[in-house]
Length: 134
Length: 389
Image (tube, rainbow over all chains, first blue to last red; front, side, top):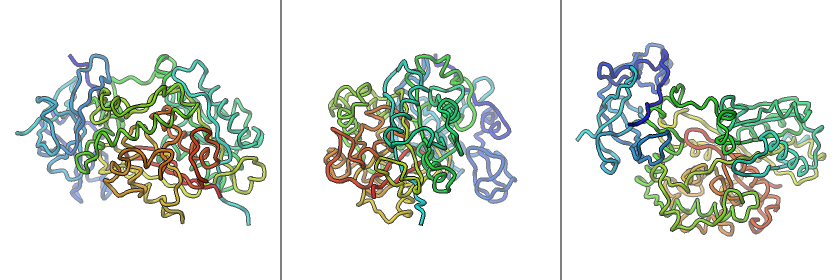
């Protein structure tokens, strides 16, 4: 059994991201004026500084931009190896998520793999992890 | 006309070790004394103190000493001081000190970086009380929840991409670590960190931390203090050592997010440095590049234009070009991989030492006059171009 994942402290900026999984939705802040995405989430658009922003659901699919197979147990009882990946999100140009690729052997993960989000709940927070889509 | 340039006039360093019993404040004072002796200055002539990142309450292993601690215990009559993490990277403390002396706020200032990460790990109650992992906020909430806990995991993904995109190999990357260990063996201050020369065979069979980075690609927690004294150009007559001019400096942050950047800040910072000087990469006699992870010097080689983007692996192939006798001697003191995680200041210390011809057994040949020292990794970077006129 892995130790509990570090728990983000919810605030005005990040709550939609960390709780969107309750409805099965991956939510990224989008600008209602210029249409660009801002991640990490902020209260204004980082492209045009408009305050007309809201967290909006994105498809929840993406592509592995890069990844690492982590072998070092950074916490007591943490099971290794596991995959940490930088996923380029579909439908949110310029946004990447650091995440884990799960439900497959670490050897099965490669660059440009198509992945889709699955949520892992812990104490009311929904961690967006990804699994291979095909 | 008054000389409004900024110069490094003294360097000093404490003992470098792992779990040193000596208190980090005393290590800092040791380094200050050595730097003052080196410059031929006395405490009474110091009128400023600059550090990175300032005392980190709750995680004093990372930064145990405040600039104000030194002002207090050394009796410094300070005209300006600063300790801050919100800067491009570690060496930016020296950059700000240079601005202070150029502006005439100060004449001679102490810049220091003290680390107690090895000793602190052994005494977490005193040195790491705030380092709890169960709750995260700020930038770490985008990495730690996925057990991407260390900068090793973040850097690894960019190194992996460099391999995928440009064909960097582990054998090439190994040359950074092997070169570091070889140079560390010639550095008396690195004896507690590097005890034998690393071989390619040992590197290739080392355990992985976060692919493609293995154990030898990661620097090692150490206990040490490094001091650089920066002086105003019109105060050089008070200094006995050979002054090293800060010929240019640059720093950059575009996104303050490790995982949102397409490439590391070393590229922007590297390109900027040459816009602020008439020197070119061909003038550089030695490079002291931040190597908290072995991949980082590759980004600096490419970012500063010593080779093209994507060509860093081939540039260091075989290691001869970056060796002490090569065309671009790299991290001649052992870098952080070989001489301990001094956290940025070691690179400035060594650049000055080499430019003055005072590096003893590890001194590079010829008459080195220009050096680059860099710090940072990921989305933040700062660089200094140093010259002996």
